[in-house]
Image 1: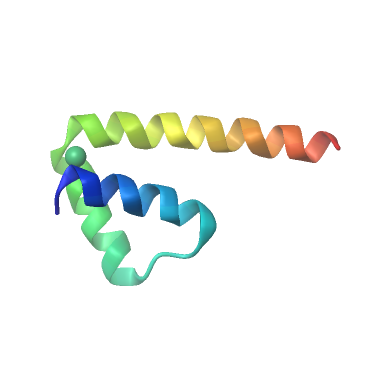
Image 2 (image 1 turned 135 degrees about the vertical axis):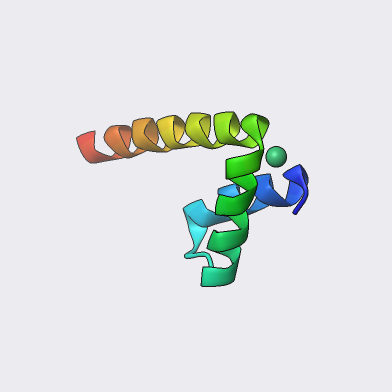
Length: 57
Ligand SMILES: [Zn+2]
């Protein structure tokens, strides 16, 4: 899997449930790729922040 695909899967995972195959591919990529691991972490921080804002409504 390429970094571009991995980032796509990460952003898609916010909108839909990934298939088991996609989850495994993404996880394997994250194990090997520091760049995407960092990116994934940033995304979950943003997601948590957005969720918190949403909860305050
Ligand atoms: Zn990557």
